[in-house]
Image (cartoon, rainbow, N blue to C red; front, side):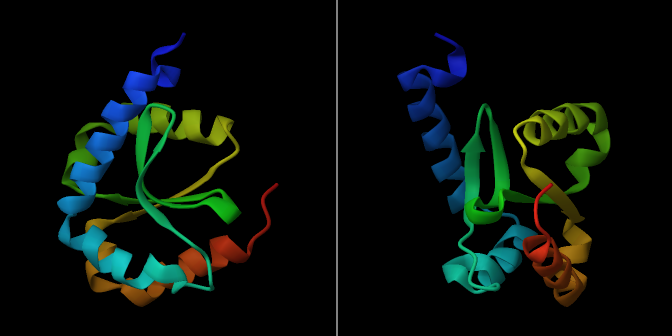
Amino acid sequence: MPWSSHPRSWKILKGRARAMRHKPTPAEAKLWESLRGSRLNGFNFRRQHAIGIYFVDFYAPAAKLIVEVDGPVHESQIERDAERQSYLEAGRYRVIRFTNEQVLTQIDSVLGAISTALATPRI
């Protein structure tokens, strides 16, 4: 049985996700205020959702859309992020990324881009 499908592995992942939800970055907290409770175009979003062995910041299941908020740590892990994104896209998920600064200073533009992605049919 692969690691990611082992029942105990899922318990570990769920525990990590729960811990991450309790300590969001300021940018994640700000974006979540606009996404939670189906506030954006009626789409339900989950935060710190596990997909395979990865956690995604925000996920809209109905659109298979992943929204990532990248902080400074992502500048030093470009290769790792590219591998992660390839994995997610291979699962037919769409991934859009924003920086912490974009979310904190241009929230209307960020929400507009997310709305556009939600309205765009998957290929």
